[in-house]
Length: 77
Image (tube, rainbow, N blue to C red; front, side, top):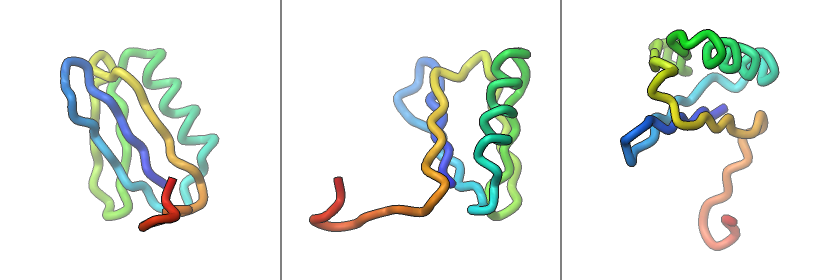
């Protein structure tokens, strides 16, 4: 599952690939809790690396679909 985080005053996004067995609803609750508490949002990617983002700098968070549906080529939307 992919998570994209937009950072304030930056044109680039932070993209974190989480393992496919991540509970989407639990992840959304953790993101909402971190944003509400003005804390650091910690995510662990599929390689085991931890990524921390201070929520004061978060512009938006986009959580990808739970199923890996990536189309490449002429059929891609």
